[in-house]
Length: 563
Ligand code: 9MR
Image (cartoon, rainbow, N blue to C red; front, side, top):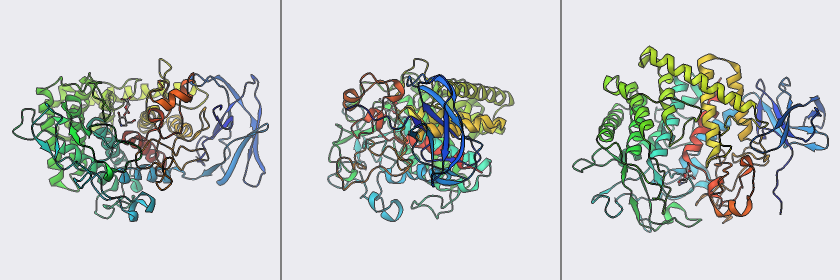
């Protein structure tokens, strides 16, 4: 059958902020403005106007109009936007719709934890499950994990951390980025007196009454795992980080973590993993100092050891061929990781030895687990008093200039995506690119206080929550047509009704024009890039969850919720 593109009147299906921008994107072939009506839950027309014609949307090919009802500021539920006979999905208007999304996006991580029982009291009945990978049969990991043959002759206790995504693997490069993003929400909120975001008790997690901010507790769960991935004393590559640990072969769907019976192996250490660990551990040392000096010191010595090891082994690249049983997370260019790690280490220690390695810059490519150069500038502008003035001035200029590019890219599209790839192709995890670009826009707002940047962040949330060519909210539980069949081995309701869907606040990877899984290949042939997405559990290349995607969403939602 044909694909379901929903209503041509596309809105943020969750909710608009009362004082924020409120726009709908309308797919309509007309080259003239058309009338729209804003209708409340009683059916009354509360505002009307005419659309503005934007033209052809590059990602989807849709001819798009914008209906702008920003001047309407009455809170309420069950609004809809009507154009002719066509009605949008229902939506709310609320004073702070994103406070709930902040909590939910951050709450993604607890039920994704490895090595700990997920308790109903914290995660809810549906998400409760036994601890995974603590060496209890039938599990064969993660308390005593050997290397793949030929890689090393020791084994490590690498329990804990988060499962990467819908699989049972745990990977250092993107795990470190996700932990970094959570810790960065903390540093931003602390500096800007956003008290709710730094609260102990914000989240329903076991550590929510320990005197430390919950967002740091959650990041620490991952950081402790990252530290366990380091090559121990007495071994040739001491201080390096193993790139990843996962099963010998891909596990079946569904398989709960505690049911996995496969052998698991440590894969070869890599320079990229070592440097990402150094960056996250250096930041962790900084943020934990007031709460736990011993842990902070442990993080700092791990970060320094990792840095030293990376300098000694600067070209150990994770190959793209290593993708049996787990993702490759391949990366053969690490100058960007050196720069980012150096920036984090310098920010924490003030040690001038790191300064001359800070040499990479934010560009319109943004940042990702693979391309970390932009994180150098984001670290510098986060902690301006710790860096030389000149460096801060230049970093600020670049952040604002790149944000201006994203702003233009967003405005040039019918659907408000700040991601506009130069080759027109959407990557695997494109939704995280949108969210990470919104993080840059948000940072430009912090630096300049120009409302246009904040509006652009809110409109990015519109895009992720339904104002797109698919009339699709990519966040579970947020909108009438919201993703809920993301690729996961335990939140696999689509395959077993006794299992839950992913928890509310889970972000799907999003449109990926490369069609890299069989379901995408079967259903999406010829799709326009922005529409290459299907809410099917087997479409891992368009519809997986992942820690570094939810950390991006959590960062942006925390920014949007701040008052
Ligand atoms: O997010 C990763 C994306 O950038 C890569 O293109 C893709 C293919 O290598 O892998 C993605 O990460 C997946 C990982 O390899 C395995 N676990 C699930 C991750 C999310 O799909």
